[in-house]
Image 1 (cartoon, rainbow, N blue to C red):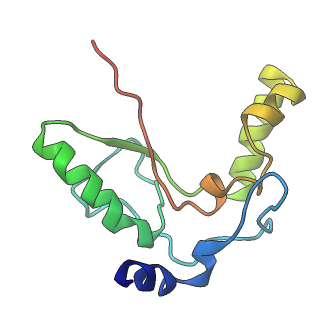
Image 2: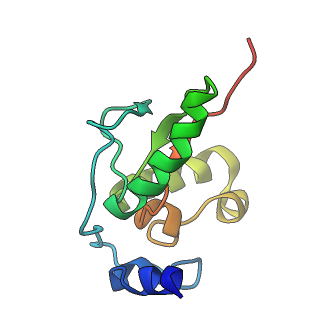
Length: 127
């Protein structure tokens, strides 16, 4: 029950349905964007902006990885509507509209880009 209470105590905008049928408004900006600066994390870009409510989980994930000698490199956070528009337009130019619609999301139609309750990590490679 304590876990349920913790979830229900979270800000209501963490529970927004966003998918290809339910877009975010074009002017939506999460109210609690943060930065990876100041955390013991490696960021691929200095401007990555995750939402503050996920940082505890991010740190909990990174800590044991670091103890095992694994460095997690975070590569993406919040993306503005305009940025998403550019990514989608590039996908259409490169692969065509049908593939872009299947493989990516139009601006505002992706929870992972607009709401940013996650951070992306770079692919690990063997060299």
